[in-house]
Length: 103
Ligand SMILES: [Zn+2]
Figure 1 (cartoon, rainbow, N blue to C red):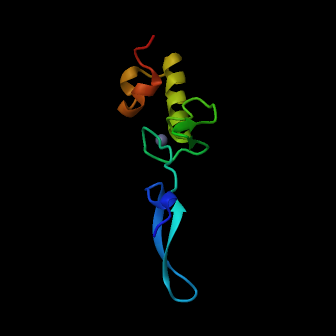
Figure 2: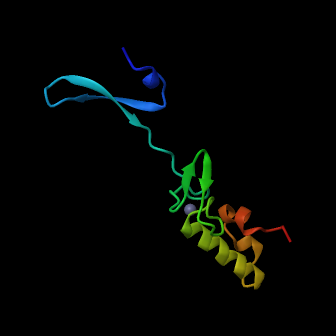
């Protein structure tokens, strides 16, 4: 009979072969999900899920965007402030984070 503490889906169950040749089911802790970039979908470094909350590094967009996308957003934001480019030249995927129309 299974131990009462192992009767839920908190742990993942795997069947493994013991050195003696018998099959035995073992229980392992599930791996957590990773935080991913909201523009390109890449895994974000330095962010972990802790009790359902994202813990970031404190960098700008640290919990939302990867390092590549956040540097692009900051670049476009600065170029727009200095009037080096116009709003129409910014790619659509960055517009939400550049903050066009907020000022
Ligand atoms: Zn990204």
